[in-house]
Length: 116
Length: 115
Image (cartoon, rainbow over all chains, first blue to last red; front, side):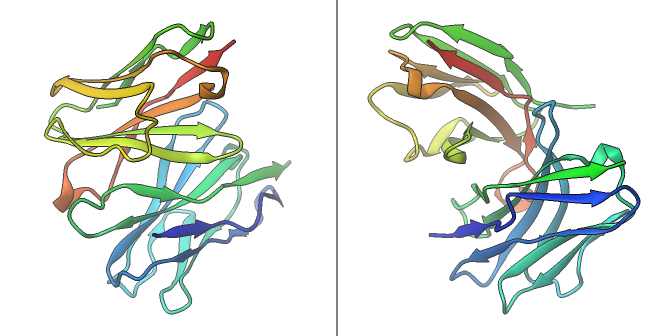
């Protein structure tokens, strides 16, 4: 079974600075998808960024980028120019690529605080 | 914008009562997931459907929980009888199916409190 580990329960960063959230995972599959979701106090789960394992290039979405290290099974999220609206819980998630294995397996989350 | 709609947003009930949570997936999505979020266990998959057929409900306590899709526009999650340990936020999510299911769209969740 796949597992996802987020070792940082809480992180804080000064507004406008850069922060990196860590995620590691365990799988025996060679092809899969990785995601970062944001959950603000409103409770809504918002997709931040996704990465296909077969792509070597790291995904980027505006101020959000990932460092995907397939051999190390590591998938960290970098937030540049942090803004107050980035304060939220961030969840790393894994999804297999095989038919019938579409479920997302989530990490335990990292609570990100932005210091004005 | 298309969105997944969940009702009710909040539910407070007494132990032993039946609880029904509803989800309207995004039109055209054929995969529906139910997740439960608690402080202790995080986000857990309860069940998921494709084309209204259950594919995996191994995460769901069978004795009190049931999940159905009466039609393509409605998914339901029922708890009978409810217990205090069922208190959690229940999320529904929908997607386009295996080939392009890289994105799941989540509803706003139902916060359930069982007293």
